[in-house]
Length: 355
Image 1 (cartoon, rainbow, N blue to C red):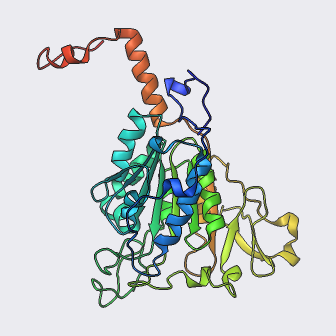
Image 2 (image 1 turned 45 degrees about the horizontal axis):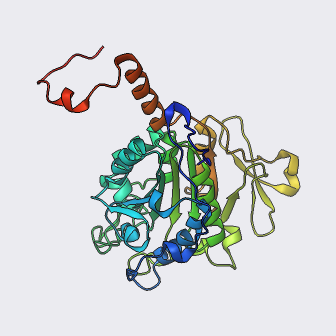
Image 3 (image 1 turned 90 degrees about the vertical axis):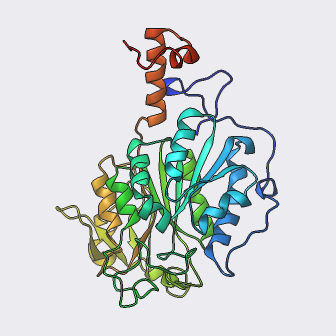
């Protein structure tokens, strides 16, 4: 989101999100509502990180909108002193699309979960990403339905025992990162609720991105799926399980950085010993590769047989936004037809001719 000059208009006639010189603090973004989640819920950490990040945007509170669907994470609008919309199940991306398209002066954030965003809301999610609407989507993934008390979700592991799958889930789970990349989202990242520094760095990158940004946040549900991501959080073993993606840096992992990824002719990276392959032979991460196949290959690394989970920005590329192209079409239509009177058009009859 670029800082505008008075009267400046972006591509396609879009107004840019306004900035404020007034100093804002984390306290300014806390509402007077009591925060109510289960003790130990990862949502607390994400909320605190998000509230302390918002002042960095430099965007007035009245120009920030939080749109949520249904689920534990969807209580976010109540706890932030901005405009908010607690919408209906799975439809947050659709509502956010309307807001961002009609009000380009707003910074629009969608809060959703693995159930809300990938089950009933899956269609809305992929189309918002496909269209590259200028919104930021945060998907909290705890691999369970928490609000409705512990049914399996679209990201639950195959064979998982839950209240709705007492003999084990038969479904092959979604990989949210792969799904977003399959929709050719222009910004795709993953982070963890308890890693505040990393979480906020990813939020900054998403906010700076022009177009749809998608962030998967691993979030612990202590009641119905506790410690689902414990290997990624335990300081004694996490370096053996986390593969950090940093643009322009060789992809290495392991406590001593002794393992790395090497590109293969088939596009699927293979694991090598750094001492054997050498630093020069390692795959250097490039988040700006236009072809999503590269980032997609990285997103498949946390599957069976590979005990390492990539976190960071998988893909960040530029493409015209849906909002901007829509605005350009409207401006072109006005030039061709003149401004006209919308009220007179709507009251003129059952049909009318355009062009």
